[in-house]
Image (cartoon, rainbow, N blue to C red):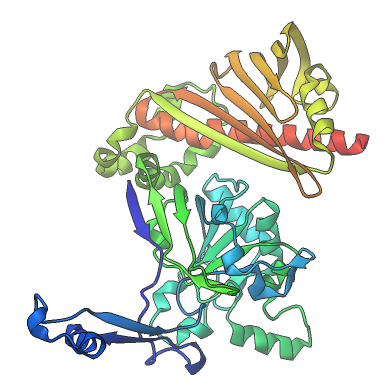
Length: 459
């Protein structure tokens, strides 16, 4: 396990911070502590083992004056029509979850991050946002820490992009800049020039409609992989507070450290993705085309020896929200024989065996224009879960799970696929992550969208 500190250091900042955002740390050394002990207890230094007393510090700081977590109360008195939560009311369960980093360092000074920027960043890392993920935005602004520019320059997240992240079921976001919005001096100038009331602090005001928290003043996001780590960001429990200073850390296990070491290989392998038009291409042909990539990767191969295995474990996860009650959604999902009527990828589905809530299903369809046959063992757990295992087909032993959760305005489906990909060690990892997983994810996404259309058209 490895822990990466994502928090800036709290110290005096009078020499570079504007007057309204300054911190003050007053240190009291051990000599001062000796005097304090005499003052409090009339106890002389000869009674102290070291002849000295304790060290102490006094801090003068805003709850927003260092790395911190903003509470919904910071944005407005209400959130989603209810009294907004103060920092001591924020559920601790929100504050420790899977993390995801989206790289926005290409954005220019003063630009707002858009929904398209987020989607492009996700596509580059072949990633998805799951409910309760902690989504971190990397702008590179932490390099300006210690200079006045830190408060007046950089980029921020637009209101539309903030809403899009929250629509994925996210409760906490974070950024390595002074604030989640673009720099306030820039926004104030734009508001005055345009006469608009929806520009200044626009992303913060999203909290009026959608309850969420965000982390500000993070650092070291460049030391993290795109995903595969936990974020812990527990704030100080300030009664009625609009924010709480927090020691934010990322926790990486062995698998996530593997992703970090392999990220450069994945990016270098991007040319394989469009050359390999089908996973059925002979591995030798792909290996020949990728020879230049393997040559360039040879210098780092010894650092990724842990992936030199015959079996590569892969997981994909898709999610969607359907505006219908859970029992209605479960009914459509579990009516497998009706799937060909509304899901183009499936031509025929038969239930060949049924015992209570256990089924054996055979399916025929097309994947990338080629005929495919699946045979699966399915277990129904109404009204919230369906589990299946593929016993015949392109990826034997693939495990699939449907989870249905009641949410505001309908039902959220989380569809996960877990499988092993057995190929040439290094090249097999690349093919599995970049090609096979992408095909599985795309097909699952199309299936969920078709089910959403079916259910909502019936309601």
